[in-house]
Image (cartoon, rainbow, N blue to C red; front, top):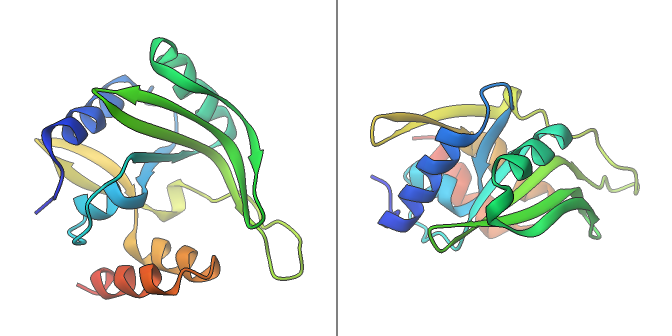
Length: 156
């Protein structure tokens, strides 16, 4: 049972309806976790995709962009990042996400297709990154508490 209010549901359904079928994408983060039965309250909607997918999504929602997509890097993660707003909900777009390895090099971009599954929302299939993948990613980023919560729910 998802913990999404109507604004989040509408935002996710709008994404699913407007993102081109050729774009490889999946929800990630708290909205994805809630859709998969993890007891969290979403703060926003996060979409993970390829670099080209990030710009395609930006183009599909040009009238809703609040932060244009551009290459962005932090200490442990980098991506083609941007944001839009749908129904009052912030939607963050992350393309070609890479995590920094302990030796300082960047791992290859996340293979979205290889790590996704689908959940149903109001009769529509929504791609989400699997909880098992998410647990491993959070563990790699040193976010142990979140990694443990996701791993617990991935086993169900």
